[in-house]
Image 1: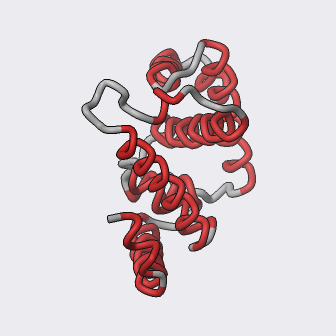
Image 2 (image 1 turned 45 degrees about the vertical axis):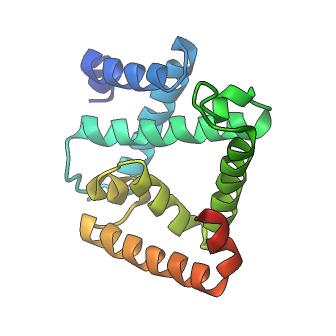
Length: 173
């Protein structure tokens, strides 16, 4: 089965396309694909009774997205990016607006850091358009209902934090 997954051209093409669309190279694809497949194997061997609500390919694609987004986050954390990576220079924004938007991004990152790693992961996946079933699979929740409940709890926690810190709320407006 592992050999079949490894040589599945459809699976490889979908992951390759996702990595390249998000700024990766062929070498990045190889790394992401291998890591995603190994993570899948580890997860299945640890939990032999695991039930996947989607297809195996979709599950592996979800793992690959997670691996690639983590890699991108590490790369941006470890090196200075050109300013046009952060801002749409072609827009009619003034320099003041560009600085303000950059400050807002920093505040959002700090804010998400205040609510804990699990909440940050759930909310980031949700904000990036992941379905609740994908979030549940990626984060090890038993069902999409559990992921929805966690998202709801995290949103309440985030809003409570903002209510307790109106200065942060004003920066985000």
